[in-house]
Length: 162
Image 1 (spheres, rainbow, N blue to C red):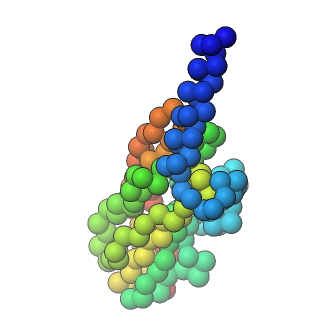
Image 2: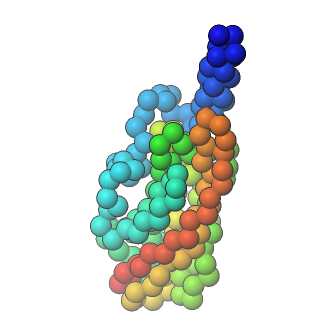
């Protein structure tokens, strides 16, 4: 009986520790949404999706496409699945693959959305009109009550540049 009580107490402490590492939005009951979506929803039109065992990453193009020579904002949505949460202590980032004719501006920080999602803006600038492919890796950290793990999601997104 005492051992069971200690096990329950240890579990509650582990959950509490994980909650402290979770993003604070003032309300931990906030749904896991990014870009006004939930992790189970289909990706937006034109987006690409990479799914891991405990996460989903969507790379979302700008709704109006890109214009050559001007900044173009791509959004990367990161969702932790099940009991997992996005680890805000891990520097989630997009590491671009160098692409001729596509410049990447200063990297942005993950903006937590609830405890299980985040948005990572990526600003690019295409040199010329025509199709180009943004490629790279999203490096992220996710945690459940027992442990944290790091993941690397290789991503690619076709951009229409006018």
